Length: 222
Image (cartoon, rainbow, N blue to C red; front, side):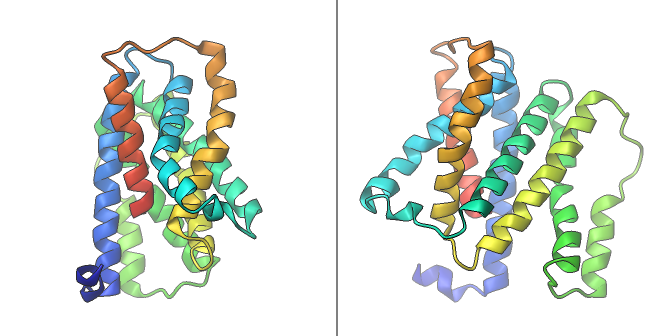
C-alpha cells in the first residue's frame, strides 16, 4: 500500500487498466477453450458462480457488511448490463477469432469515454478526443457476421457498465461492486444454464476456476 501511494494517481489508474486488459484477454482465451465442451450459458454461469467462492472470505470477514448499500438500483443496472455484455462477448468467442473479439471488446472504453465526457461532464481536451478517434479508426473492414455483431453489442453493454461503475465509485468500494456482481448475476445466468446443462469434465474444471479467478482480478482492477 505504501508503495502504491507513491505512484501518481493517474499512473496507478493506467497500471490497473493494463492489468484489467491483460486479465480480460486471458479470460477470452479460457472462454474460447471452454466453449469446445460447454454452452456459452453454462460458461457464463460458472464464471460468476465460482467467483462467489473467491468473494466468500470478504463476505464472512465483514459479516456481510460489504453488501450494505444505498444504491442497489445502480448495482442491478450494472449487473444486467454486465450479464448482457458477457453473453454477447462469450457467444462471439465461439464464432469468431479471439483476436477479432478482443479487439472489438476494447472499443467499449471508447464508447464509455464519449458518454463520460457528454453525460458525466468529465474534463475533455483535444488530446482526449484524438485518443477516442484513434480508438475507433482501424485499417480494413470487419466482415458483418453474427460474431462481430455480438461482440459489438457486448462492448456497448460493457460501456454502459463502465459508466455505472464510475457513477458508483464515489460511494461503493470495488469489493462491494464485485461482490454484488457475483451475487446477482449467478442466479440470473443459472436460469439460462439449466436449459442446456452438461456437467463439465474433470479436465475442464481447472480452466473454469482460472476463468473465474482472472475475471475477478480484471473486475477489481477495472
